[in-house]
Length: 455
Image (cartoon, rainbow, N blue to C red; front, side):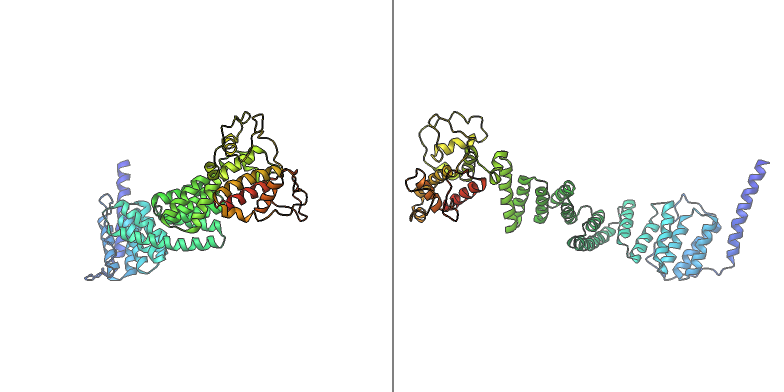
């Protein structure tokens, strides 16, 4: 009974197929095609593992003949009837895709090719049709994806690589323009999305990575910006713009010395003054950041210690101190563990700052304005020894100082410092010698000395 029922089922299925095909037999036969209407359409090969009854295969072949003969409606009927009796026969889905493609119904064509590829993702005729449908719809991203899939299935199709590269270039250029416009308008999130989309289409583009890093730096996504900028530099180490973008990200992260190095590399390729200035400023910042906190606090300090002042002189006027005549052996007993010790001894040996009679330097003592005047005058003497012409400019006559009489022990030092423009008096001519020198006054005085020294 079971055998008889099975035979009966197969008989009914065969009869159903025969009936469908017989019903269609009344259609006029397909045309004899001598010149194909669509020669660019690939032949719809039927894989060996895909079976179809003879009647269905004939109907499928007729559909292809009708398509190439220009009978699009007849071709559509043939392919549709094949799918009615054999839904898994994806070449017929592909045939319907080409019918829609011939009618310039690109969205419908794409859906048909997608249906075929859902059954066999490696079916080349459907992949080729997907390329044409995407091109017709103006969807460059889908075209690129389809071309990449074809080359993954059949790497021998080298002629497609050039087409793929051109498409990628077109996408990249379009996205770069749109992304730059969004960034310049301040729409950073939109610009980021555009550049990320472009990067998917061209993951090895140093330009896209560079532009993306620029936006991420502006957004404050600094670690990601640095990563993308570094990848851009790795891809094209000769691109000065990428190096400058990397420098900008590193600077924003507080990596001053690394940022300066990146700017220097950029300048070696493209000597832009702005980049050179940034590099120099970052080197100065890196040097400052490497110094102890007590030194960095000087510019805003209400008072300054002798140790701080010695460090500033030793650092900012290093070459002057190195070239100054050395005093006999100087013994200092209280600075061995002080943070400014590396600068205190050279400054003392140059005679710029005195060591007290008990061999102490007293690095934590507060510097008064009269103390600062004495130290500045010693520096001016070093300049005068090397540049007498410069000294003549501040030795033309003592300035008016109302609160320091000519007989005062500090008068000559104060007069020299004021005449040289390193220290100032108030509107009433008062110098205030006993007042503590501020950090701003110390910075201004050392800067003036450096200027007079021509450094």
